Length: 350
Ligand SMILES: [Zn+2]
Image (cartoon, rainbow, N blue to C red; front, top):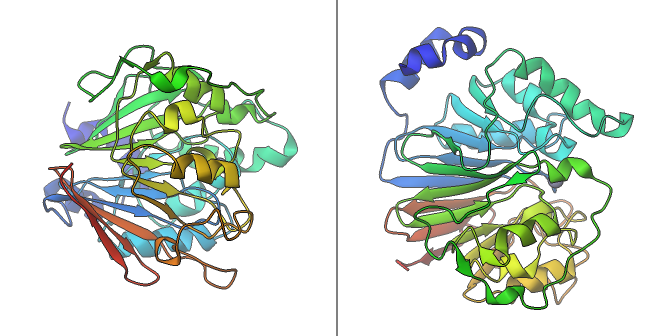
């Protein structure tokens, strides 16, 4: 099926014709790098991927209220993205889906990708994000993938490894180290899940570009990370670990974090959300890790459990909205830039 036909329903409702045509005829920023922007949403998530072909995928939309939408739109402008090809909603908590309707009012969105048309948490405190999202979800054709499915972003290999509580059960085909016995499972702990069942439904993604691999498991829970890592590491090894659940200790099982051998980690914590000292230490202790980048200095982390300032996108209450920008080459090398300071660090071919 042609792309035009495949996207006809979504585009008729959400994408102005002129922008649609532009996206069909060429990438706004075609090059040889994958650009990733870790956008500050004060402890939510919004991560933008722009593939070398120019197709775009935003993972989560931050909170409702306009602040995060403004930040996302500013980064889209910087990245020269005029149409979002895919918006992945990992799950329906307000720090992930909250900004979806506001964003859809400002930027054409071709497809949503989510875990299905329901939420397990319909109590009043948690309902608003899903209710607002549903109004725009119903206008577009949402993709509801199963573990093992791909999100067909041109130029990237995006694989779903968790969805609606289901996980992949065999090693990811072609992934380095996938399916191997995991020595970190010996004596590994499980945890009693906290009462946030929607986190259990999170989509988890593996994004691969050439030799580069990034893991983003949304807000998946500790015991699910354990299942993905024990007794066999089903995911393989990575260059970058996007920390699960903002660095909250209900996630971050070391049997996974230590097995994936990421060279860099990015913690999407807020100043007072996530960024727990024990989680931070576990990532810091992971074999092969060079740097732990943080979207914020964590108040809870204090002097001993925060990275040096140059690895922090935002360092205090008055200094919000700076992002981290990663530029990735197919040989697996990448460069990270801190938008607050311009500090750059390169990571070579592995
Ligand atoms: Zn969250």
